[in-house]
Image (cartoon, rainbow, N blue to C red; front, top):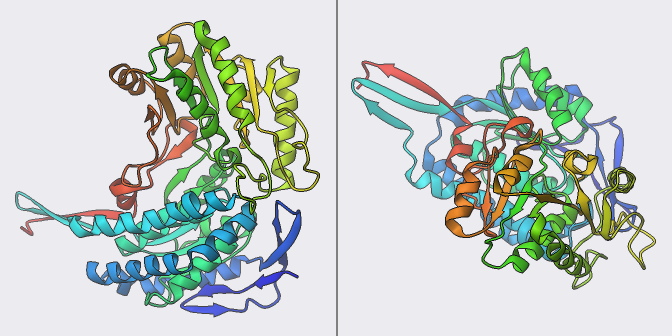
Length: 475
């Protein structure tokens, strides 16, 4: 029996939208529906945007203490309902429960907590000579978020926007909308004034397009594919809206010959590529190893891939759950077949379901060797647990290969620290992880080239929701 999450949260109230199409939410582990949502229309977006506009004058003038109090209540709610939210994330997009409780829930919580620390010391006003420079809320925001890190991607937009004094309309992914619904319930109990936060479920062509083009929305923040990002930017262009986008990636992981622990760097790169079943835009999906050490790296990667236990997200010991949908599964299978057809060598995994699994959208963790950077699996974002190993001649060649991509979201370098930093500076990416360093919520996140524009996370992500006013003669 499916549970209905069919209301929208508009102007401080849960609204029965009436005669709307219903969409079943599928659990990718069972291929069965476990919930349903209502599919919003342009009229629903209009109601939400107008509520946000009406709420903006008051919330934009709220004090920092008022904003911190609301965000603190949201943090408390996330902690109290953490297990429920983690279970929802696991059910809606297939994350193993360990990952759902730590990384998925933890990252969402981390963004709200980080913004609290920013508000402790952020200076909204600065005197320059006789001029007062004031940073003010940017306006009404429209948020369109993806399914792969559902709470994380919502939190890194909602938290800084609330902290900046903005109001907003959120459209979460219709594929993984339940964790967003639960967050909305927490926000509804936080003391936030009516209209500041609004939730409308639906798809991209209808609700997403309506948000992007709505005249009452000043800022659009989108996370998703580069293809969809282009459509969002086009829809927003007529309104001269501020648009920030976090899009696709094809990140290179350069393993230098002087890596302090070569075996650990290679095995860690395999695990990082497979994390979240490969469904991360910043995943290190291209591993670059020198020709001299490639044979050694291949054997290490083969052994590491064998440890990637695929199975039921609720089972203890599962490292990889299913990918999110049949559409995603079919795309990954096609790209694996293309890799084989173009001459790459499968050293682990390959097409088809993992052994012992005949139901669910499970993908065999796959490693390709003998990959050249012009192959499809080296150019396109697979968004599954598929690693391409590419040989380089020397360090200059490694940098050239790493930068030879349409994307520029993230990069990874393992090597002697000073040398690794030197290589990292040459990568045309918004992030570089050196010697296995993990994410940092206080650091800016975003990409170069077709990986998007603008930044999320940290002070830089917060400032995306501020406008700057210069008041000459005010000081």
